[in-house]
Length: 316
Image (cartoon, one colour):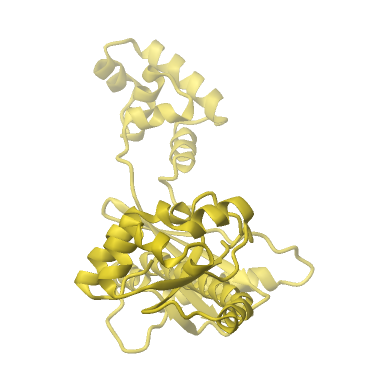
C-alpha cells in the first residue's frame, strides 16, 4: 500500500504493511503467479474479512474501506511470480479501494486491459530515470574535471569550471564573459593538429603538454574526435614528487646507487660524494658505472637526464 500524505493514514498503512501476510492475494499470487486484477471479495466474504485483525480491523476499517482490488506490475526482468508481495521491491502493487463491496466484472476487465500499458509506462519511467541519473553523474564528473570541448575550427564549445580555474592559474588568463584558449595554448593545439593532418603520415597520439608551477604540474592532452568534428582537451593537475634519493630507487637502483645519483644531480664531485657518503672515490665511481649500465647512458649528465625523464620530472 502507498502513502496518501495524511500522517494518520500513513500510520494506519504502516500497520497494514506489517500485517500484509493476512492478505489473501499474497498467498494466491505466490502459488499461481497470477498478477491480474483481483478483489478481496474474490477470496473472502464480509464476515471472513472482518475477522482479519491486521488487514481489516487495524487498516481498512479505520480508513472507512470495505473492499480492495489489487494487481501487480512485474519487475523489469519480466518476472511476474513473486516470492512474497511485500518483499518484492521490484514489483509494483496497485491497489484500488472502495467504501463498499461493489467492484464489478467490468472493473476487473478495465484494470486488466490497463496492465500492459501501466507495465510499459513504468518501465519507460525507470529507463528515463536511469538515463537522467547517468547523465547527471556524467555532467558532475565533467564539471569536476578539467575538460574543454573545441569545435573543428578550435573555438571553445564548452569549458568546465575546473578547466577555467586551471587556465587562469597556469596561463594567467583574465576573466572574461566568453571562454577562450590562451594564445600559447592555442598555438600548441594548432601545432598538434598540423602534425595529425600531414599528408602521407600515419597519425600518432599527441604528446601531452606539461607545465610546472611551484610543486604542481599541469598536463594537457589533446584528443581528436573526427567523427563529431571536434577536439577534446583534458587538463589534469598533478602534485610533483619532491626529488630525493628514495625517488631514484624507483628506477631499479640500489639505495647507495640512488644516493650517489642524487648527489650527482646536485652537481657534487666524486670526491665530495665520497665524503658525504663515507666511502672512497673508487667506490663512488663503481656505483656510477652500475648506474650508467642500468640507465643505458655513458655520462653523468646523461644519467641525470635519463633519470628525470623516466620519473616524469623533466618535461619532454
